[in-house]
Image (cartoon, rainbow, N blue to C red; front, side, top):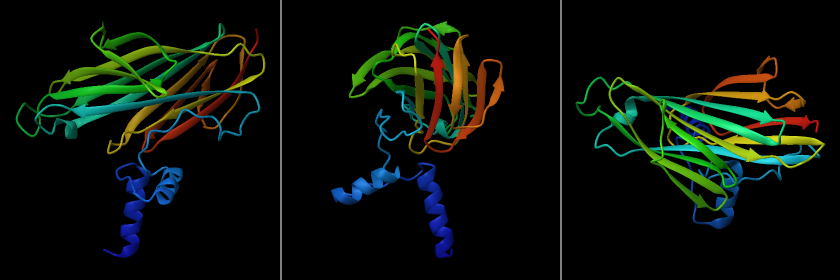
Amino acid sequence: MPLKNIAVAIKKSLDEKQMVMYFKYSPLQQEIEQLGISGKVAALDCSKTTLTNGICIADEIMPIDANLGVNKANFFVKRLMTMKLNIKAQGLINHVFSTTFINNSSSNIYPGGPYKNYHQIYLPRKAIIKTVFLDSDQINDYEVNNINQFKIVSLLAEIPPQKTRTVRIEYDLKLPDYDGKILHQLVVQKQIGALNNDFVLEYNFDEGIQLVRRNFTALAKGNSLIYNTTLSNDRIFLVEFTIKH
C-alpha cells in the first residue's frame, strides 16, 4: 500500500477516534492533547470560545458503553442517540438524552448473543438528575458518581438478539439570572473505538427567548431547531440566545 494511502487511513482513524496517541514525553503529549487526538475527556471550559462577550454555559455529554457478556455482541449493535434541549424562560435548560440500542445479532450463538451493556453517561457535575428510563419503565437501579467536573450516571442494560431497547435520562442545568446574551456550548464526545452512530440534536425555546446565532445549519421550525448528523468525531455546538425577564 502506498505511504500516502497509509497516511490518509491513519488520519481518518485519528479523526474518528478509532486511534488515539499517548507519549510519555510531556511536551509532546501536550501538543497531542491540543490536537484533540489523545482520547482525553474534554474539560468543561468556555475559555476558548470567542463567539460571545456575554455569559457562556459549558455543557457536555459523553456516553460510554462496555460489553460485559462473554461474546462479541457489541459488533452487531447499532445506536441512535438523541439530545433534546428545552431552553426554559424560568431560567434552566432541560435535557432529554436517549440512546436506542439495536442488537442485530441473529441468535444466542457465539459470537452473537445478548448485549450486556454497562452504560455510563458523563454529564456536567452541576446537572440535576430527574428521571432515568429503560424503554417505558422508570428505573431507580442506577448509580451516580461525581468525579472532577463530571457527574457520571451508570446502569446495566441487556439487549437480547433481534431486540431494541432505549435508555433515556432527563436532567436540568440552571441558567444564571442574566439579561444579556447567553451562549450555550454543548460538547458531545465520541467514545474511543465506537462506530459512527447517528445523532439528532433538537433545541426548543420558550416564548420570550430569542435565538441570536448558532454554529451549525439546522432545520428551523417555529421555536425549534433540529439537526441530524453522524457522530464520527467529537462535536461542539454553539447556540446564543437572550431571555426577556
